[in-house]
Image 1 (spheres, rainbow, N blue to C red):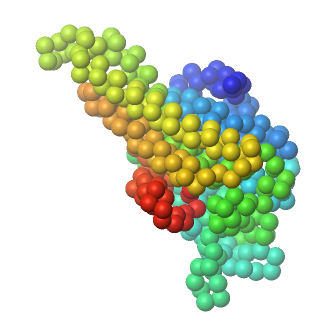
Image 2 (tube, one colour):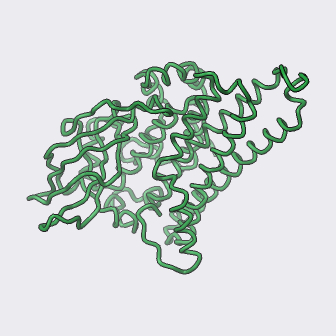
Image 3 (cartoon, rainbow, N blue to C red):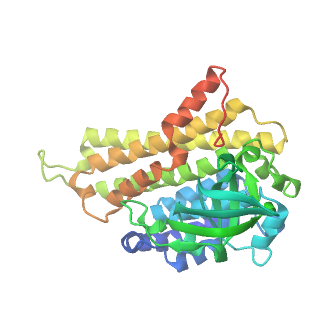
Length: 388
C-alpha cells in the first residue's frame, strides 16, 4: 500500500532529528516543524474528504506517527494527537465540522478528554466551566476538544460529553514542565462560562456505541470505527515509534563501541549485548504487528459495513496497552545495556527513555484496566467503557 505522506515525511526526518534536542531543552516544537508536517499532509490523513482530507487507512497514519516519533518523541506525540483529532471531529455534527474547516482545511484541534469540565444545560446548548491539563500541542490549535460532565438540577452528574470550543473561548496557561515529552507543551486550558451550542457537544456513550452524528455526512468506513481503537492506538503508535528509533540509534552507535572495562573488546562481540538487541527488536516487532493487525481487521469490518465484534474491540485494546508495555520493555533493555552512555543528559537513548515513559502514563495506556476489560469479556461478563 502506497503511503505518500510517509514518503514526504521521510524527507523531513533529518531536520526534525536535528531539532529534537532543542525541542527537549526549550520545551517547545518550532512552528517551522508544524508547517512542514502540515504541508506534508500529516494532519489531513484522517480528515474527511469533504473537507480536503485523505480519509486514509489508519494504519498508514500510524506508520507516519512511528516514523516521526523515532527521531523526536515530542514531535511525534504532537503529530499523533493533533492528527487524530481530525478524525474525531469527523464524528461530530456537520455544522461543527464546517465551523472548524469551513474557513481553512488546515485548522488544528487540541484536546483534553478528562471529564473535568462542568456543563450546565441552557437554552440551545450548555454553559461550560473548567480547567483541563495535558493539552498537547495546544499552542498550534484554534479549537479544543474537552471532556465535561453534564450537571443536573440537583448538582449531580447526569452525562459525560466531549465538547468543541473555539480559541476565543479559552485561555492557555503555560504550566508544562515534565521529565519527558517536554517539547509537547501540554499546557492547561481554562474556560469560564463559555456557551457551547448543542451541535458542538457529543455524548461519549453514543460515540462508544458507534452512533455518532458525523456518520450521516462522513459515510466512509473510517468513521464507522471505534474511538477506543483509533485514539488509543494513536497514542501507542507514538511510543512504539520512539522504541524503534531508539533501537536503530543504539545499533548504529554500539557497532563501533569499545568496552573500557570487563576485559575490553568490541561491544558487538558481547553475547549479552546481542541478546539484548534481539529481545528489544522482538518486542518492537510484536507491538507493531499486533496493533496493526487489529486495526486492519476492524477497518475491514467497517469497509463491509458490518458490526464490529466486541471480542475484536477488546482484543484491540488488550494488544494496544501491551504494545506500549512491549515498547517500554525494549527501551529499558537498551537503556540498561548501553551503560554509562545512556546517562548523559540529552543523548538520544536517555531522551527517548524519558519520552516513552512519559507517554506510557497516558490514560489510554492504563494496562490493568484494559486487560481487566478483556478478561471480563472472555469470561462472558458485561463490559461498559467508553474506551473500547
